[in-house]
Image (tube, rainbow, N blue to C red):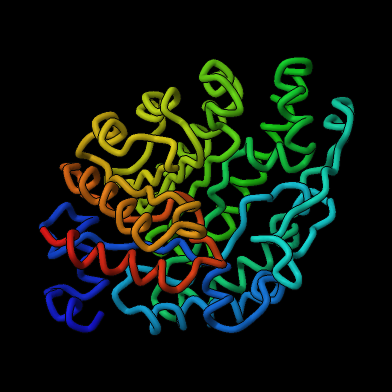
Length: 356
């Protein structure tokens, strides 16, 4: 890649700053959204990566050094949260048996929500691990991470995804009660982090998987999810948080217009799944926000070199039209077991077709 990198006129940091400011760039940045892949390149098991924030951070730094053409930084977290934070059991991906940690449902009946205790943000579940990772990040000049998973994702972890979907229909009061408790916990965790690091030094990655229209209709998003997402981002706005990524995992096409009512800062990155159309999404979010996505993870993981080149080319052709700016990203976390030749094919296509 050295011959192509020589065409770059900006450093990765300068390129990212230009994107955030809405200024011209030399080429499209690539954010790998890498955790399990970072562990693999660093040579550690995913269970070790997720249990040890120091090694996770070292793995992220190693990835940056190994692939300096990327616009990445050390990243830490996982989607299946909630149950552990509220007192449930975590399942670690030892021996790389899973992509990321999972959990077992904590509650099984709606009436149990009434007596569910709200945990201490200092000691709850993943929070102490994230706190260690944030300290390392700030020492190296990276932002501290605020809790960005939606309340719905946490709630589904607490009761189990299948149960949560049933409760939306059968037990709406229990769902609202649980969503309120989770929202308070997320805000209390954020308050602690902001107090320690300062709002200007914090960022939010808001993963939004459970609100996908493949799981719930837009009417349920509006009733059971949107009010609590808005409450969290009202808090972030009042605190002065300006660095936000919203990752719409799956198909959120029907929900997309409703995000206009959520107080996101200008230049928020909307990262979308491969199920969504880049150009149509760009029209809805407008030039105020940055478009991110949406290389199909299945193609990265299992596709041929030719398929990866075609898929990345599709993303670049559509994304580079967005007047608000575009960041090439996988549709979700970079698949940990992606063949290195497919990563090379991605980089080749980016350098062939990603310059402005």
